[in-house]
Length: 346
Ligand SMILES: *[C@@H]1O[C@H](CO)[C@@H](O)[C@H](O)[C@H]1NC(C)=O
Ligand SMILES: *[C@@H]1O[C@H](CO)[C@@H](O)[C@H](O)[C@H]1NC(C)=O
Image (tube, rainbow, N blue to C red; front, top):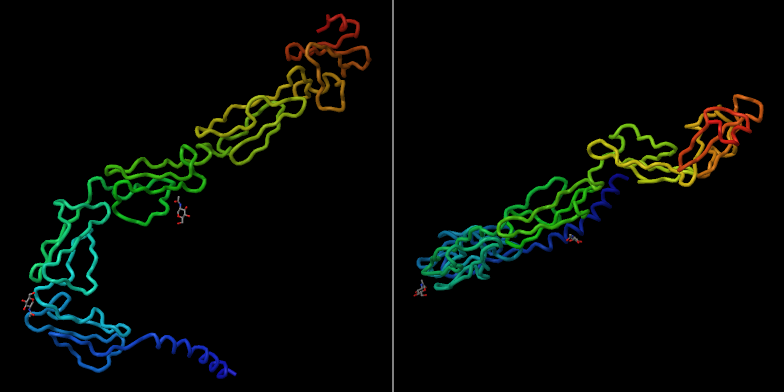
């Protein structure tokens, strides 16, 4: 059972292995004019290396007087070539420069090549070419950092640079984009902002702040502030007050905890155009409320109501309650009805 299983695996594996080998080609011996190479063979396997030298008056199209080449899938790389000594090999260029290499690997005597400075670099003396003279290159252009180039953009708290690979130098007018960390925004409420390299320095980057404008969670401000008659619901960053009817909320509905630990402005519960007889401020026992169905008794503005006194059982005794300019006044005493109606028992 075990062996049959193994056979199955080998069958599957074999075609892949054959396919892999079929892509690797060996090399035939190179044709090398004006030179010698070793070892000499008819066929060289992929990966085989050879060394060559050139006759007097010639040189390898590579650095030095002896050179190497390797068989890479049927081709010699770099191809062994002996070139006239007055020609040039690929130049050794200075840092931060680039040029288009010759496809043949060498340059004829007198050939001039163009060198470019990398972005953000410039040449001091405006020379951006080199010439092959009798087998040697004239001096190679030097590229230096332009004074209006910028170094890496600054690292900013709670911000990252996006869509930009790392580089040490940025040319003038380069733009990089910062993104604020999740939950943070710039002062303008944006989550992304770009900075530009201008005359050697970056424009100012974003200050990423916590999106809720520096507010702190309500837990940081301590006990929830008391707003008479209100009910409060809290979330992490805000308290939400509401007032039961007949009260109406006046002022801000939400209250937040400022960064200095204080609460923002509080709302109030008001009942415009009427006074409310509230069991919180007028404890039961003082009188029996007129309307037992609701929590509150309402005294309309400018009116007076009579509430039966609870302490004195006999019905004619009552307490007057009046509403003037939104202020509720409750009589101190319980009086017989005929005194109250004459408005002399307070
Ligand atoms: C190399 O080239 C020069 C002129 O380009 C020629 O005079 C000279 O004979 C050549 N040298 C050899 C070894 O072929
Ligand atoms: C960043 O790159 C991605 C993909 O390349 C692209 O979808 C996105 O729009 C780019 N963002 C900015 C701000 O350029």
